[in-house]
Length: 259
Image (cartoon, rainbow, N blue to C red; front, top):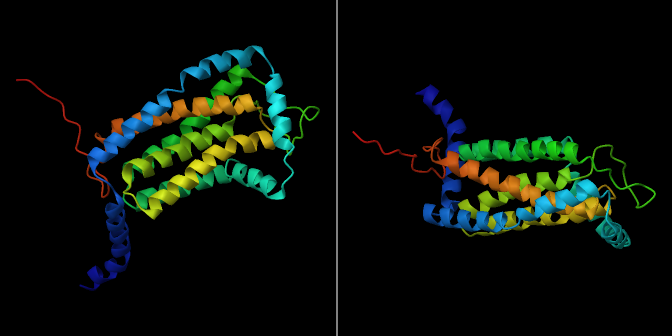
């Protein structure tokens, strides 16, 4: 009896967290419908990346890149400068590693076991694709003789690794919040914060002089493609693994067999 009583303080918080998460999860048909709409919108922008990549491969920089960068860097408002620097902060090491690990741990603790594993993939996959494409394109970053560079980085420029990470990882978290959670202030707050990070990281990379606008555009497109793959992997595995997880379980995938 004493041993059972000693376990309660440990087990009750976990059970309470999972019960709270269950109360926020919407029905399975709604989750499926939202997932379909989300993926459909992403797939529509994928084709543009191939054309942009071909142009960037043959052209070091575009006049419009320089014009947009100068226009953005002409904004001298102190709050805007702070915001641009703060938004990019999440994409630099070590926080780009620590933050995903914390989020994965939180998801798992709340009973979203498969979502936590899929989030690990969502953090790693865009980074791998980014390294491969950057090594293929080998585009130099903006030079200090052309724009104001807040901090010189030595890696290649196209596509932006920050933007791909934000679209791939924070975009996947946005998808989870959008498709899994019921309408509430928690869900609304998460959606606003995540989409704000994704939208603002592109301008922040240009403002800091570390990427051309076309680097950012390419990263948004390629990051969207990575996000589609992540969602497909997530939905594929959702009905095959962890079907009995504490929160948001799915019916197991069944195969028809003939005798």
